Every structure is written in C-alpha cells, then in structure tokens.
Image 1 (tube, helix red, strand yellow):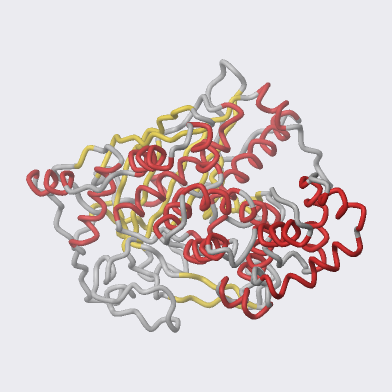
Image 2 (cartoon, helix red, strand yellow; image 1 turned 180 degrees about the horizontal axis):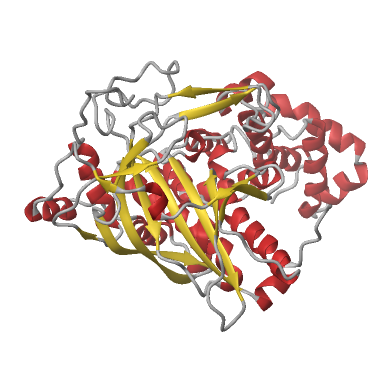
Length: 499
C-alpha cells in the first residue's frame, strides 16, 4: 500500500526536528591501524591482509602513531579538548566483515571531546556541538552478488573482502542539534560539507564519499513543540552531500506520516535509497550494553604529551571558513555572491581554476553558470560534472585569445563534459575556432550586403547602427565562427561608412 506523505511545510509547522550526525573518516595513513598492511584503495580482494587484521590466534596489535596524530589534529581543528589519558576498548559483535568478531574502538574514554564546528546556512552562522572524536579500525566489505540490488535480499551469495579491515577510522559524533526547524536538512548538509573541507585542509584523508573514505550516518527525530525529543532513527552510510540533505528530509516526512496516523517511531537503523530518496528499515538499534565493551587488553593506554599537542595545534593550517573569507576579499565578492558560490559547492573549483590562470570573474561565470546547470540536470555534484578546473581555465584562455567566442566556447564545453578531450583538442577537431582572417570573411560580408541592399543603403547614409543586422547575417552563415568585431569593421569598410 502506498502511503501519502504530508507536505514538508506542513510537517515543520507541526513538528520540531532534532538531528545528529555520526561521520566516519578513513585516514590516509600508509599502513593500517594496528598492523603494517598497506591501505591503498582497491586491489585484488583479500591481498592486503595479515594475521593481525584477520584476527588470527596469537597475533598482537600495535597502534599506528600517525593515525593518533591525525586524530588529535582533527580534534584540535574541531575545537575539542584532547584527553591527557585514554584507552582503546573492544566492541563485541558478529558481522561477517568483522574478522575478529570484535572491533578495536574507543568507548567511555575517547581521544577528543566537547568541541564544535561553525557552519553557514543561508547567511546565518550555526554552531554544531561535537560530542566526541575517537579512533577505531574499519571493517571489511561484504559484497552481495546474484541479485538485482546489490543488497543481501535477493542475493544468491555473499563474498567478503578484508582489504579494508583494520584501516584507521575516525568517528566524529555531533551533539543533538535541535532548533534548526525547516532548515534541518540544509544544516545537516552544510555540516558534512564543512567537516569534509576541514579534514581535507588538514591533509589527513582524501574524504572521498564515492570511495567510502567519508561515510555519514544521519540521526533524525521529530517531536511536537513543548514535548520531549522523539525516538530517533539512524540512516546508515549516506554516501553523498546531496543525499545527506535528502535523507533528513525523507525521514522527517516519513516519521510525520507515522505519528499523524497514531503510530510510534521505532529506534532502528535505516537504509537510504539513492534512486527513490526513501529510507527502509535495517535492524533494531543496539545499545552500548549490547556491545559488551571492555578495555582492550592487548594495547597500552594513550597519554598524549601536552607539549606535543600544543605543537600540533600551532601547526594547524588556515581553516576553511577563514580561507573562504580571504578568497572573498581577493575575488571582490559580496556576501550574497559568496553565498551563491558556497551553495553551489564551487569554492575549491573556482580557486583551482583561478590558480590555473583564469580570472575570478571568468571562473565563477563558468562554474556557477553552464556547469552548475548541467550538474543540476544530471543530479551530480558540481565536482563530478565532467570538467576540471584546468580545462575550464584553458577554455577561458581560448576565449581571451580570441580563438573562441562565448557561443563556441559553450559548444566546446559540451565536448569536454562528454569526455572528448581538452578544449584545444575539441576546438581543433570540430573546427570551431573563430575566423578572424579578413580574406576568409570578405566573401561572407559581400554576400550579406548583396542580400540586404536596403540595410546596406542605411549604413552608407550614416546609420551605422544598422550594421548589427548584417553582422548577424554573417555570423549565421559562418555558423557563429566569425569574429564579430572583424565582420563589423569589414562591413563599414566595404560600404565606405565610418563608426
């Protein structure tokens, strides 16, 4: 039976959403968290494993110092307090992709606590509290084959690849975020976007959601005004910024529909479906006691030296919000214009395009214009639209050199997005370069004059503004490849008129 969902505006008028986000970041260390196996993405299944990450009897873990340092740097960038003493714990549960039947994580004594991250939503600053940042090891990956969906339901068999098992994983857990109201989905997306930018600026992870090095679990609940917070659900492994926003919105609509019908929300994990934008039930949510946490007996506690932590803090790079404000000043943008750049997710793309040789105005024109339109039409992130900053800068360089006009440049851009090659290669292959040679254009100008004698007579009598009509005729006959200024000069010369 199909359920009719309420309108979003109606939901936020009657309910207050509370959101929370649990984000997992795979660190870009050379080796795994507790062994020396490589961490490169990909590779033949089960080739980057050893007795330690496979949990074989007699193997002992050794903590990766680089991963600990990276976690402290993340905590410092998120304004957290760094523990002077903490330790690892065993989180016990059985999944086929967890080779030891437990995960080495942190429980009641995390490495970083009580921080915050400020994000901008519609020009307003929203402070997201950070509950904890802790370090753990990643699981393997289960592949369900033989079915149509890639999920276990309908699959004929499941295969496990342990290459990912043991890779250092940082979990960043926010405090509950009430009060966002109708903007809750946008706040969730803005937080994950800003968090990704912060982590990327630290150089500790490539934070590629499409490769799983940044994964987000989205907690959502609804309550009526004045009542206690409702029961939350946890939408697991949302794998794009756009989907973070969609997952919150979808759960708000679904939960409102259940509550309106007199039902109760079940505390459970849910799966987000990219194709439909809906969520479906996963499993009932375990509590901490279900995991039977206890201190990891094979690892010594961590006691980061205060001087080392201070040294790491002093070496933090310029953080994204500060960096963006500096770029805004350099680019000469108003707050409204910069907000448009932020909303499009184009800051880094424009910055890289400028670094490749384009002016800020030209870079912004392409990324916020033609390329944003294409991204919206195809439902992809702007960075995945099919053009690189270097290609956009090259395209603008051809325009600046007079080899392409705007119309031809858009045609070349179509080829770039389609993967046909560089702008110069496409311009040459398709024969799209602007024709500015007077000899090649004279015949087209003479044909236009002959075909429009009344307009030509007006120009001869001094009404040079009428030349625009003849320029248009020449542009049409040359498929837009004529240089408009050269054509206009030729027309006036042929008709003995002066500008």
